[in-house]
Amino acid sequence: MSLDSQLLDHLLFLSRMELSENERKLILQDFERTLAMIDVMHAANCDSVPPLENPVSQTLELRADEQTEEVDREALQQMAPEVTNGLYRVPRVI
Image 1: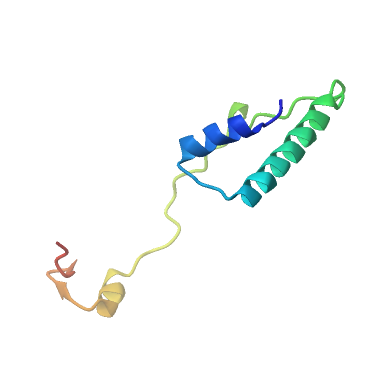
Image 2: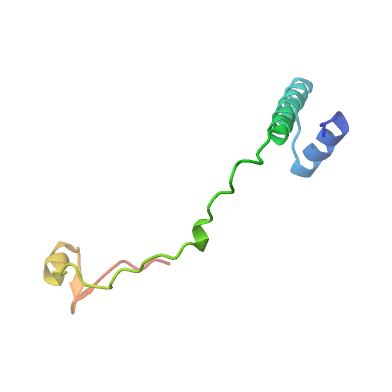
């Protein structure tokens, strides 16, 4: 596949972009190099490479749901700017 000026015009129209003539030339060169690199990658023989493992197919061991620490509510509320009846007061946001 190659990127010609007509296809670039279409892509620029779809993306609502405008490029100068110099930028167009640079973009076309970059696309050509990228497509050439992809062609090289497609030509590589990967027959002996095993497929990657899929992490979704592995079963995960669940840990026990145990309480590991205590929360000192009064100590935390002493740091709060304002507390009423054991509840944190916050400014109204509207």
